[in-house]
Each structure stands twice: as structure tokens, then as C-alpha cells.
Length: 330
Image (cartoon, rainbow, N blue to C red; front, side, top):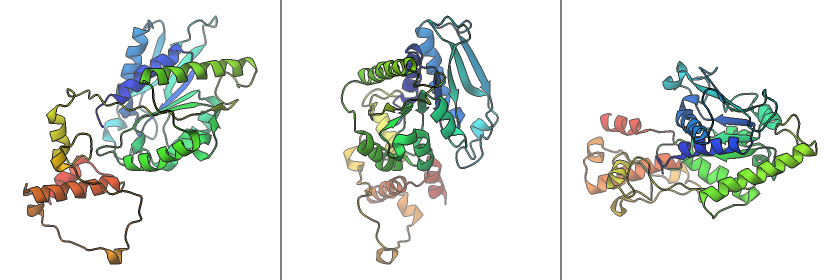
């Protein structure tokens, strides 16, 4: 569900990655303005780990090129002229070379050079709001494992939700994750802490061994390919509400946000599945829906409205709560 602290968790995990010695980290999102929470909690995590804002960190802010252009970020007015964090440079601890830095920086997902940059330099790629990035671009970002290989030269953390108005969320769940489960196995089970820290330490040891043997080029991720295994973690405790708060369920029902975990049983509707092909248009019935009847608050019309909005989200229809308002005002 939405509002479970996924971006904040990624930010805190990034600070742990720095503490474990990762040097070349890239973060991406449909728009850099979406990464405010991630970078905020990344800096908070570094502070808790004893890093000094002045002595240890350099924070670079700016307006990235290409924001608001292309299929990602188009019409994103919040990010067009806004100064956002693009890169954080950290003094590497335990190094005798004062010039050695650990860097976390933003990489536009649709950058033509993204694949080459990741293949030659990245040790870790963090993808936030992945459901809003087109699947072909996600496949490129994930590297060889998304194209059938069982190994890659950098780790990937991918965060998203498949509930609510999240564009391709259903596509992410049904297509990409299913493909990753088939190709890389599923590391389910265990707590989030053990899964994340286990990944940190095992990857760090592998990088050290590869560096000592000369398999890695210039300390980056572009040398030896390391085994990649899928680990899935789910956040369930709400951040904006108390656990089980009826206000959250009421809001989801009001905005027709499909979430089987939150909607009351009386309003749950069966969402369409992708297991069967849609019928031919000649086999379908076309109905004229009366707007006043649709928004009459009658139990039957409410159930129909929930079904209709579930159909939009399940069919990868890029929608928002504004669409519901437009339907009501049409």
C-alpha cells in the first residue's frame, strides 16, 4: 500500500551502504523532485552514523537537464525549475587518500548514457517510484539480469507500490517481478534488516575479493559480474496513520483506490486478472453510463464505480484522483 515509508527506508539503507564501503551509487526516479524524502533520510542516516555535515559531506543541488522532457517527467511542473539534491559526496572513512570519495548521485532513467554509466561505474542502483517508469526503460536499468542473464556487476534496489494511482504498477507486478522471479529466484523470508544487511556484507566481501584479484576496473562496478538474487520485502505499517485506522480505508474507498488490504469487505471488488485474453470487441456490450446515477451514492452504483476504477488501474491506465473528479463534473 501507499504511505508505508518506502522512500525513507531506501534513504536510511543508502546510509548503511555508505558505511559498508559502497563508493559509486546511483539513484533514479521519474523526476528528481520525487527523491526529496530519500535524500532527506539518507542525510539523517549519515548523521546518526557520525558523519559531519561540514567535514564529511558535500551536497550538490541544481536543476537537472531534461526535466519535464520526454515520456518521463513531462508536465512535472514541480521539478522544472526547482533546486533539488542531485549528488552527495562523502569522505571515505578508513582511507589514507583524502581525495577518495563515496558518491551518491541522481541518474535520469531515460538518459541515453544510463546503461553505459551503470555497466562501467555502478556498484549500487536505487530505483524509487519504479511503477511510474516505463517497463522497457526499467529493463535497461536493471542490466543483464533483466535480459536473461543470471549475474550483473551492480546491485539494484527497486521500490514501488502496486496499489492506488501509480500508472504501470500492475505492469510492474505482473510482468517485471514475475520475470525476475523466474530468472533469479526469490529470496523470500527473514526480516528486512537481515535481508538488507546480508546483501550489504556479502556484496562488499565479493567486491573486496574482486578488487584484490584485479577483476574490477578503477574500483567501479564494471568488471567481474556478481551473482544476483531477488529478495522481496514488503512494508505494511502505515506512516501517516495508526495501524488499522479507519480513515485510511475510508480515503481509499472515497477515491476508488484499489487495495484489497484496506477496503472494507462490503466494498471489495474483484479486479480483472491478466491470466486470460480480453474478449474481441464484437463480443462486448457497450453501455451508456448516466453520470448522475453513477454518483448517486446508491450501493449498486458505488460498486459499479469501484469496478470501473479498478478496471482502469488494472489495465495500466495512467490515471489520478483528478480523473475521478473529471468524471463527476463531466
